[in-house]
Image (cartoon, rainbow, N blue to C red):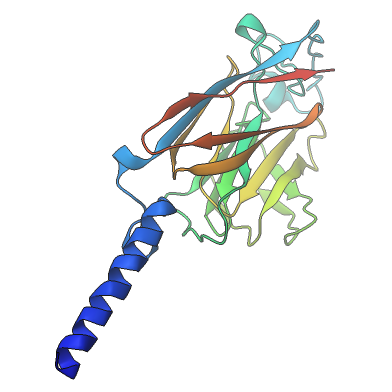
Length: 248
């Protein structure tokens, strides 16, 4: 066998080994994600066990523009329990198992609205370096003030209709945000280094989609009730169920 043919066969052998290794990790050549049909989905429900605390009415009389947005009094959202004791506003995310994979932030910005002098959504998730568009839909001026531990703190006034865009450089779960003008306005911004996170809806439901096959630690975070973790292994194309139950 001549040298050129030997080198060609050697290169093909190394390439085949590399492709095989990527396939075991659930990734295609050059670290690209595998096709959608090879990915896994993790679904579940977050529940609250016990008697749910009643939300408290919010006094917005200090700003008539806020008060008139609510024919019935607005209420606090620290613990929101819906149908069949489903718990809303829980961040469910992969906390371990992705290794040293890196993920580009999406081009589509995350959106945090100030509507009726409350944050919508109450808990918003985004990736590090993904744009966050803050929208003021109210006929009043707001002041948005996140208080991070692992990111740059900022504190900005936002009149009605004026655009505001920010980013967070590093993962942090989760950042409290408040309005210095309206003290009842409180929410959270969760920043991740990957796209595998979701906030539970009013029924407590969540879906983590397009997971590469592998073994993971899944964490559920709630602003008042703390965190719960579970370990799970998913194979290519699998749909698995994972539920969490919080107690006060």
